[in-house]
Image (cartoon, rainbow, N blue to C red):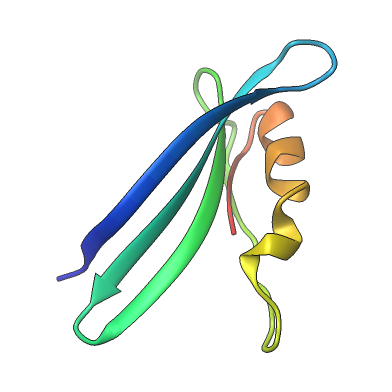
Length: 78
């Protein structure tokens, strides 16, 4: 059963004041630990979008894409 190791949440706004909730999370399942970021729109999301990166990459590469998707109503996880 995965355990959430930590969670950090912060608010950002785009140029037209559409608030977005950004957060960073770490979870552990057994000896494995994962880190992920997410951005949620205010209100009900239209859909969930999961962004995957390849090897030698990290979720930092999605740092600008996640809030942009959330500003358009998607719950973005990367």
